[in-house]
Each structure stands twice: as C-alpha cells, then as structure tokens.
Length: 118
Image (cartoon, rainbow, N blue to C red):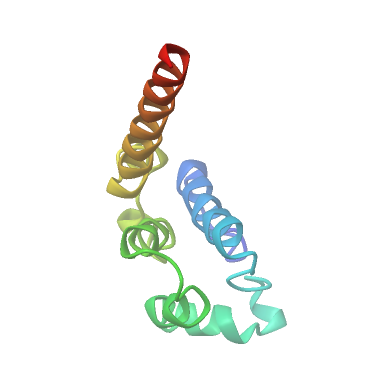
C-alpha cells in the first residue's frame, strides 16, 4: 500500500509488517527482499500473483500449519481481508503457544516441588 502512494490504514500496514516479521523470526529467512515494484523482487511478484501459500510452502516448510495460517492471514494483499493485530492475538497459533508455555511452567513448578520433598 505504501508504494502505491494511495490512502492506507496504518493498522493494516502494521499487520502486514507483523506477518513478515513473524516469518523472518521463525525461519531466519526474509520472505521477500523488497515490496518496491521498481526492484522486481521475484518472491514479491509471486505474492502479488497470489502465490503466497506456495512461497510459504517452499521457504517455510518447517513451519506448523497454524504458524503458516497466522502468517497467511497477516499477509493478505487486500487490506480489508488482512487479519487485524487485535485478532492476531486470538489466533490459534498464539493461543496454543500460550497454553503450551503455561503447561510447561506448571510442570516445572511441580518438578521443583517434587525435588524439594526428596
């Protein structure tokens, strides 16, 4: 949206950036180098042609299906279809991670309590 120099909703741009950043943090690879149309980044051209899912399968094959869905929802080309940051916080991928972390923390506490009784 920024390169089109038209009106845009900043929070939807934030969502896009969150999707790109999430992919980068999970894979240590940029999903694409630039969204500047003048640069003709092959990966971004593929995204603009509707190939985001294909690109994620190629570059992010190690990601869980929920992680891929999280990223796909944030990187929708149409801002009206893009997941809002507030909704991202409720995405199953983040909820599942939070539950796993809570369970792990509870297990750690139980292990420590058991060790103290020995």
